[in-house]
Image (cartoon, rainbow, N blue to C red):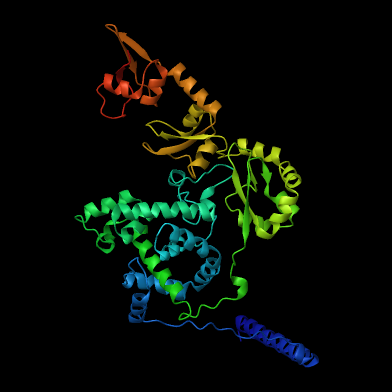
Length: 467
């Protein structure tokens, strides 16, 4: 017998001996125990019903819907996803729907919109009021900043009304109604809500001016192609949840809470208010998702703060004491953070900077008297890479705005006089707006007229008449 064989033999004998000892010990241990005290967890099994293509198609036809619920293999794949592959997600949104759907239904009825539009918020955000996308769309209805602002949703460092369930649903209802009036078709209106009306019009042109979603399907952005099928699939899943064995415990539902609203315009700490009303922090934050920093700032406008309805009597009785206490806690610390934290927009106005050839983030930050970290935060940039023509959001304080303009006035005047005519020589980074501010009695329109410009485009070295 070789040395290798001897080693393998000894190892096998030792392993069998150790295993025999462990089994014998385990049997002795079990015999010594009270068998009634041993807990053997039961096997659990969730029955997942199967539904054929024809069954789903027939069921969809029975749903009373003003919005077409067209069925095909693309929709079927999403039905399978919501009812089979990711049942936990569907259960989660079913639980949240008991809280949010009554809000949606009331507002949709107010604007005479189809009730089934409430399912659109599931596709948008999974019914998470604080949801934020990679494109900086926020809230239940995923408004980007400019669209939200155009529909009256205020957003700053302290407060973001895109996360307010009532206000954002009001804005979404008005926006969807305008899209329907624009296209006269519900499927196209929903597609436009996802990718913008401009992209839908482009798809219509590229398709040869067809006017139905499924005729435009391959001309629409990739995300939008899956958007409407998801809406149809989640509408089906909610209407046939029992047929797919979606059974939730009471603890999985979020039930509506009766609330009342107080209006404040002085600084107010949400946690202090909750402590004085004996309401836990979690409930105060859940009722006020638009209050991002657990406080509202001192302002010339009123902010609404929701509290449980049964606490309103206590608040009214001790109103001045409660508001006084809640107006002091953490005020200085938050105001410091509001002005100095990276990406803060508090007390600032937004301008758009279009990146020109040769520009880098450091130079742009210097021009506007902000930090590179601010610009990256405002524009969700993960590196310092920017491209020519890119639009950057810049938030300016009144002081930095004044300094930026003053700096431009002192450096931009690269001018020359030829035969009595004054010319400005365009420098890298100059815009018509910058140049108009550098010369008295000058506007963009006047500049364009003096120089026969058809657009706002100018280039370094170009000579512009300025007087």
